[in-house]
Amino acid sequence: MKRVATVGRRLALATALAGGAFLLSTGFGLAVAADATVGVEAATQDDEKKKRKAEKKAAARAAKEQKRLEKQRRQRGRTVRAVVVPSEPAPASEPAASPAPEPTVASVPASAPEPAPVPKAEPAGVPAAEPTPTSALEPVPTAEPAPAPRREQPRASEPAPRPTRTPAPAPAPRDYELSERIRVAEVLLDVLVTDRKGNVIEGLGAEDFVVLHDGEEQEVVGASFYGGPSELSATGEGATTRTDRYFILMFHDQRMQAPQLAGPQMDNARWLKRWIEEELQPNDQVAVFAYQARLKVYLDFSRDRDEILAAVDAASRSKKDLEPWLTRSEPEFDPNSPSLLVNLPKGKELARQSRKLQQALELLGEAASGIAGRKNLVMFSLGFGEIGQFGSYTPDPRYYPQMREALNAGNVAVYTIDTMGSRRRSIASGSLNDSLSHLSNETGGHYYANFTNILSPMRQVAEENQGYYLVSFRSQYEAGTQGYRGIKVKVRDGKYKVRSRTGFRYGESAGP
Image 1 (cartoon, rainbow, N blue to C red):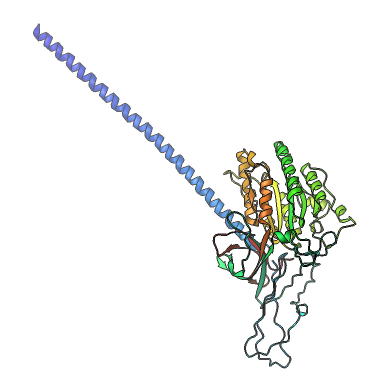
Image 2 (image 1 turned 180 degrees about the vertical axis):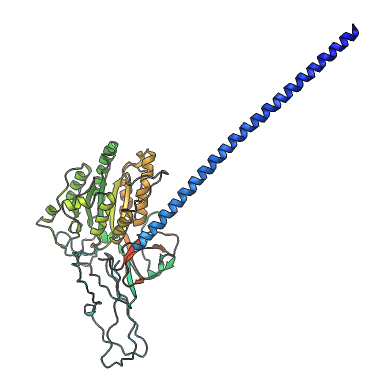
């Protein structure tokens, strides 16, 4: 019996060992299967990461290609008519082999006052020629007839008050060749210089400014300061000098797309009228426009506060705009006064040419090019354009380059003010405001958002436009070419903030 019991115990032990081995092998198999599952999931995640990385690279390449194409368009665009005054003719008794005097460069203002002429140096060994009046200089003849000049506009600092003012017209540009291949443009830029607190800086000279084109420093030949509180409030009588400021108020009416904008737009109009009543300077010229599927005209440049207030009220409520010819038929209208309407299309043609907001702004830039001095376009908008597939704003290459060039050529700085202010909540609209910031940065203006009411940004716009510099510099280009060049302006003292337009036109398309 003992032997049988022993055998039984051994059998039980063997069975237990066999069961344990089976369980161990099963657990190992399950562990291997689990590890394999984890490996598959990790590989899937790696593939997704690689796919996202490839998509980002593709987006970066697309953005880089877009920038390259835009740069090419800028180079082929339009820009400030270049002028070079030829040398005075030598005396008749002068030998034919004597070298001709070196020509000098004459200033062609881009809608700004003309700087002082540059003295001419005579080469050694050549007798001085008799001085020749500017009007006697003969331009290079061309086969095509000269186009009819646009009606000239007054200078910003003309002293006579409205309605009897008779400002001096801007000088007509002329084109002269320095040689058969090279011409020189003398370009005028309006430049704002402030400290970190926004106070206007006076007393700078040409040597304090730096103008860069493609990283290369251009020759700055002059810098004059215009404005100041005393000139802004002067009447122009006696020996006082009067400086006008130009404000173009524009409502971008987007209530059809976003009805919730009705309340903020009316609030903006109410605060804007308060700014006009309390803080508008006697010499401030104000024009009022609106955009709703087309450009709407409510008021040409005027100093009459009652007219300005009525126009702001009508534009903010989308009332019927004025027909362009009605404002021209007023008996007290001075044909030499600053005017945007005189250079704008009329009637149905205006609607046809302003179907896009960018086209409307381009028309205003072209119309303002005949008025001397800096013009400030204050636009109330939620944004414009379209949001791309990556949730960011991209300028429309069909309209944006031409709009930017026209505004810069017309010395129009765009100040954009968010219609919603601090009430903006939508992420999509938050991306649209990139269009406003982009436009302001490229025209020497500023973008304002996150404010309680528009009285604060309007005060800032008026404060920084109390005075500005007209900086003239020279730029060479090949004869027979035209286009648009990007520039950057700064001061040698890095503690000041500088704001100016970012480009200019050159060549035959520069125009007045």
